[in-house]
Length: 160
Image (cartoon, rainbow, N blue to C red; front, side, top):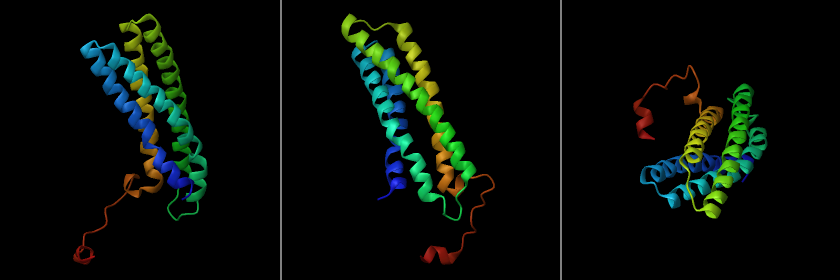
């Protein structure tokens, strides 16, 4: 196993954590259930923690791939820049969620303005994660690159 494997194993966790967190938070707001809202805050904090090793395995993963024939340094750098922005935003989301979580436990109240604010920042963060993931996919998935042409279908391919 190398850093490319580790990075691939980790990279979906923060994205999925944010995605599920947004859905859980929406459900909590709709149901006006503070326990469900609190669960979403835990998911955002977990996504923030998981984003750290994901980000820091990116550069070593790039080093593993850089000598492959279709590797693009430009695409890799764009992914890294997008991932840094996503890391910053998930960190902010995680810290605000921690503050809201503590407030929810100590004051036993679930304030709508704070919760809606967290929802907005979580949606922005999720957008940055989607962008970073999409750019990361282009690194080793040629079908995501501009100008990709699907290979012609042949009967020989069906026999394999």
